[in-house]
Length: 482
Ligand code: NAD
Image (cartoon, rainbow, N blue to C red):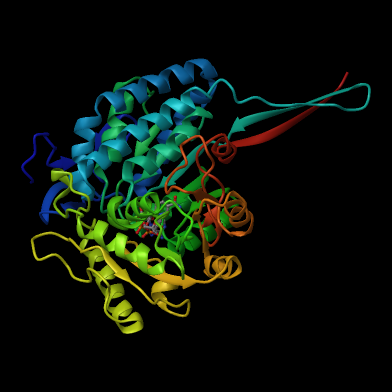
């Protein structure tokens, strides 16, 4: 275990019905600190029987939880939010050791998880129906009811943030939750489960079943008593999950990958554009972000100057273990490290030597240098496929039409960004780009209040904001003759 000021249990069970339990098979798996390559903890590995136990407890807890008046549900959730925020330093350390990310970013993620719970706690008593005008002699109204037990499948890149993003609106709307964290990063979800019950959430309302996708994720998606599925992860797994959910005729919310265009014009504030570009692909979670700015589209008149400035900024980035809070920390797993290094080799074959980076860092742990390929064309794999690491593909364009064509020429459509001082151009881009989100003169700017989700292969449905409540409610219409 790493030199930890925080005591991390050596063993974690499953968290079901407010209790730690062993996996029914007795099987466990290890979670690894990607900066030291040491084992952080041994974790119980759930299988279909364990998922069944968790779902059954969540189903038993449903009647009570959905009957708690909204205001009281909100009060309980606010206590959970406070507990998460108060414990942020400890949780952040655990997240950093489990995932690798810089400590300050892990703390931001933990606080954001608390913010999600607080934000939706405030909505628990504001899920209102509508009154529909009808012909005389009738009264018609709608009620937005919870769906039931919701299944949440979480990726490894933002384990605690993405957990909170789905958990909070689901619970606020009166659903119960079974969450399956990613096998690479199970600890924060387990910690939040226990913390929530300590803070007053009734047992069984939120259960956590760590384990592998086919063993624990698929049984959760396919379980007859799971009424809705929220999946965040890759497109191929998203397709499998989507198919399985639709076979069971249950609503599915898919938050998938991206290959997001970051478009820079010569009239942009270049200092801000460089700073945002660095954040968008290198210094936030080492580029392991669905909404990273992985394709940089430079107008030909600013190409050289922008790259000069960008290279200077990237050269200054510190690379170190997450607990030292560097700019760029370790890649979360060996598997992801290998996949990124493979893409760097593909990039070399397609576009030639990178302008900077291109190597693993020569030290223990899964560290990769921030890497920039220039001269990328849209028929190259590094222009079209999600690399999910600190690797930037630079393309050049000469006018607005070409910028939009390049921006839209991928299967993904998660987010996009434009840097320009021409307001008209920025909004023309916003209108024409095929993406669920548009950042103007900033990257990662949208808050938890704004809807987030993908166009095209980047997903179905919307997280965050008021929009997320629609994912966790169903509408009943009541029509009465009076
Ligand atoms: P992944 O698809 O490999 O795994 C995601 C989760 O699905 C894990 O918990 C995994 O155990 C589980 N899983 C695997 N097989 C399954 C199956 N057959 N049935 C059910 N569950 C199964 O994705 P990942 O590598 O953990 O995450 C990276 C991907 O997530 C990237 O593509 C990234 O863009 C995407 N992502 C999207 C968002 C978003 O909000 N749009 C946010 C973060 C990450």
